[in-house]
Length: 255
Image 1: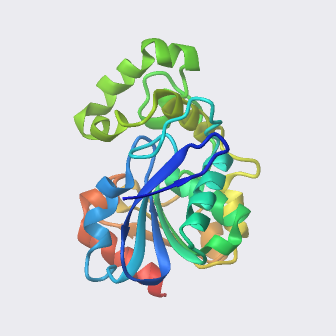
Image 2: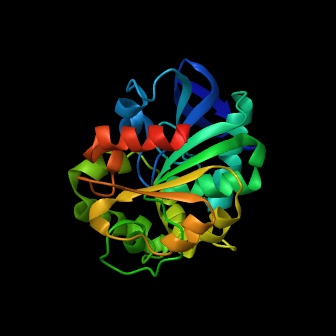
C-alpha cells in the first residue's frame, strides 16, 4: 500500500502497487468501489502482468481519506488523481478505468495530458443523466439532496444495491458518495463524451455485449475510439468475465 497527500488540508490517496516496467498502468474504480477489489485478478493475468500497476482509490473511496470539505466534482477527482500520479513519478500512463472512474479518467486526460498515453474505458459514463428516485447507481443517489441522503437516504441505497456492491460502497464516505454521484449525473462542460472525442491518444471503450449498440458509437469510431463489446458480462465486466475483459483490454493496449 502506497500513500500521498493530494490536498492542502493533508488528505491522502492510497493505492496498491504491483512492480513492473514503465510506462505505468493505472486502474481506476467506479462509484462506491475500490480498485484493488475490482482489478486485482485481471491486473496480474499473464496478458496484463509485467507493468508497474497502480490500483488506486479515488478520494472518498476505499482506502483513501474521506474529507467532507472536498468538492468531489469530476474535475476535483481528476486533479487529486493527477497529484497522486505525479507524486508517484508516473507520466504517460495507460489508464484503465471503470464506470465513474472512466469519467474521471477522461477529465484527467483532458486536463493533464502528460499523465495519460492510452485510455481504456470500461462501461464509463459519458453523458449527463437525469436523477430518479429509486433508480440504481448514481441516478438514484443524485435524486436525494445531500441533507436527505445523510439523514437516512443512504440506507435506502444500501438496501437497493445489495450486499455485493455495498461491501465496497460502505467504505465510501457518505458525503463523498452523494457529491460524486451528483456531479457524475450533471457531467462536465464540455461533456465527458465531447472531451473523449477531442483526445488524440489511443482510446478504447469496452461495454457489455448484451447492452446492444453503444449510443453514439459511430461518432466515437470516426474519432478513433475503438468500441469493443465484451460477451457474457454485465456492467462489472472485469468481475463478470475476467478472461474476456483481459483479452479486450490487452488488445486495446497493444493495438
